[in-house]
Each structure stands twice: as C-alpha cells, then as structure tokens.
Image (cartoon, rainbow, N blue to C red; front, side):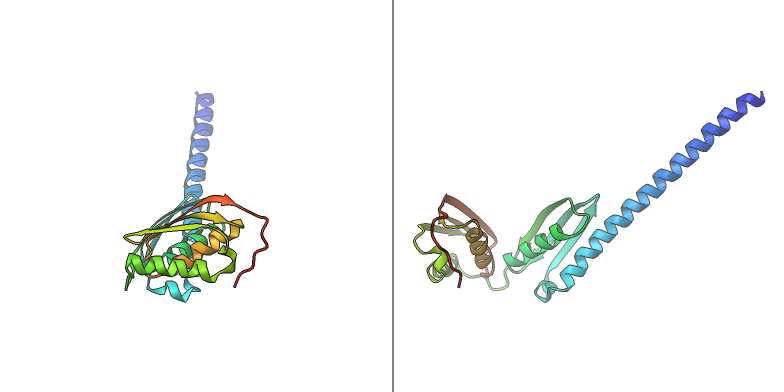
Length: 181
C-alpha cells in the first residue's frame, strides 16, 4: 500500500507545481499588460496636445484597444502611432472617435485641402480630386512618392472637423524630383 501513495504524492506534487506555474504565468501576463498600458500612458503624457483627450487604453497579451474621443484626427493618429511603437505591442485597434470643438464646414475643409495641394510643391503636377462629406475626407489622385501620401494625410489631420481620411492613389510616379516646404 505504501507504493500506491508514492505515485499519488508525485502526481499531487506535479499538479500543485503546474497550478503554481499557471498562476505565476497569468500574474506575469497581467503585469505585462499593465506595463504596456503604463508605457503608452507615459508616452501620451509627453504630448501636451493629447492632454484634453478622453481616451481609454485596454491591453491584453500585446493587443491594444484605444477607445474614447479626441478633438483632432491628428490626435487619433498620434495615439495609434504611440501604441504601435510601444514595446510588447503586437496589434492595435483604434476605435477613437473624433469630436471637433469647432468643426469647420465641409466646404471650408475642402478649400483648406486644396490650399495644401497648391502650396506644397510635392503635389504640383499631380491630379487630385477632393471630396468631403460630414468631415470624412476622400482624396484620389496621382502622387510622386509614397511619403507624399502620409505627408498629405498628416496635414489634413490637423484641420478641425476632419473625422476620417481616405487617400486613394491612382498612380505613383517616382520620376519627378520632389521637394517639401
């Protein structure tokens, strides 16, 4: 009968060790989730423009969910950029809603975008069609460099009242020498 107790004791010990391992692993993951969240919050704190935002950050196993509201589309972009650059983040879902304090009309937004396209030499010679509906901006056109698309998106994101940006590249022509203001 003494021989039967020994395997049960070993099995019981292994079970306890396994459960202890699971418990410690889940605490480490929870700690890592808290660490990721805190690193994002620390980076957000260095951006004074994001101070008036009402954003919540949820983390789980490297996945980050951003929810809440900001006043400018550029703030939404900054939150996402910060999250992606944070160590330990493997995926980001940005559900932040833009609620402008003093939204401009669609007509004014469209005119501001046309001015950006006219003022920046990197867009000269390209054909661009701009549409704005309820703050949602769509730009379709020819660009001379992939960075020009991101540059334009960043400029549009700073316009009060823009809630979403879609840029469709009909052609990318890399032959032209480009300059930025």
